[in-house]
Structure formats: C-alpha cells, structure tokens
Length: 321
Image (tube, rainbow, N blue to C red; front, side, top):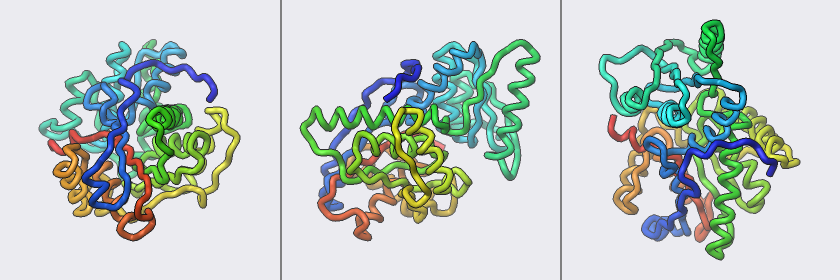
C-alpha cells in the first residue's frame, strides 16, 4: 500500500470474534469483525475513514468540518466526535426539518458539539452538495477554512480506511493460523466501506468473495458508482486493478420498505444476534446485512460449511430511538 497521511483516532485493531451459536444454526463457520468497537462516541465504521479525511483537512489548514446525513446519521455522530477530538468545529447538515425534540444520534451529535443545520429537499443527497459548498464559501469569506467531508465519508480517500482494514484482518487471520474467509459480508450504503473492502480483498484476500447487502435505494448503491469508487480506492492505494459494474457483488433483496425503515427480516436478524450471541446490531444497516447473510445461506448462494466473515459497522444507538 502507498503511504497516505492518517491521523490516529480509533482503537485498532478491532477484534474478530467467533459466532458459535449462529454458526451452528446456519451450518457455516461465521465470524464477526467488531468495527462497532472503534472507540469514539458509540463506535462504528466511519472512524477508519475519518482518520484519512481529517488528516487531509488538517494538512490544508482547515479548522472546520462540514458534513451531512440523515437525522439519525451514524456518520454525522462519528464525524462530530472525531472532529471535536481533533480540535475542529463541525457543521452537520441534517436531512429534513428540525424536530421538536432531539433523540438518538441527533441528541448525541448535539451533545458532542455539532453545529446542526437542517436542510429539506426531496433530492437531499444530490442537493446537499451545493449547500455544503455554499457554507464552505461563506466561511471562507469570514476567514475560516472549511473541509467538506462527503456523505458517509465515502470517497477514494475515505475508502483507504477499509483497504487498511482488510490488511488488518488478513494479519489477524494469519496470526491465528486460519485460512481467509470464503465470503465477506458488509453493508452497501454510501459505498466507501464496500469499495475499500472490495479493493483490499482483491489485493490481500483475492480468494474471498465480497458481498454487499444494499440498504438504500439512492444512486450510491448503483453498481456503476460502486465500481468506479472501488477502482479509485484501489488506484489510490497503489493497486493496479480495474472493476466493472458486473464485478460488483451487491444484493438488493433486503432493503425492505426503504432506507432507515426497519424490515421484518432485519428485525428478526437483530433479535437473533442479540439473543444468540449477545451482540447488538441496528435496524438500518447491520440488521438488514445479517438478514441478507442468512438469506444467502438459506438460498444456497453461500454454500454450507463456508467460512464467512460479517463486518459489523456499528449503529446500535438506533435501537434507542
């Protein structure tokens, strides 16, 4: 891997745990990468991305981070924690009108020091880019340099966090004397985590099939977008490999009613993981991802006896809303 500036923010390496009860239930050897234990705030996958993005912001002399997300965004929560820890102001643009009372991640983001702004648009993901650019220009006129952290921290630079995560996991498996997993299952959301893992596996674990369980219907989840981002992440890491949309292993069957809306299968998966393994998932991301994993085992897409690694990207605070 190429050397890219990185600001240490999280508690790494995060552990990989066996899931003996679910393994027995499903007829596979299932492990979990505990990236819900990354250290800041409630933990989660964004910290790995922010180590690279905030290092870049600081190298440019920026004192403010601007980012955006849903009202219960894990990304906004983790960006706020990482930004404040790094001595930076954090402006968080939230999707929708300001609620009368703050709960869940919104309340925690405010507690951590986020400067919350609310932006209503039917095309929030697209339109908020212009809004953030305007805020950046306004701050420049006031003499403050601001850095825009993309939604989900999902660009080629942020994805380096998960290229590096695959290297970390490969070292953990090697130290334990274990063969790499046959399958790695992770969320497909804004794309940065999936792209980093796909690029990292192509280099460190070329025999491992990466399965992305899609949890959103917006353009981020299109195979073409994921292929482009994966290729950009690989190039930045110094890997000479290309991807087409056909190379991207995404499963769109488990979105349920929509992004941020619990699904019966996702809720069943949350309850199953909690009752069988004592680990909390969330209804927006990881519950639906585990439901996809279970569904692929039941359909035979993941073969009986396979070695499977499930990446837990955090978000259990959503259970409290």
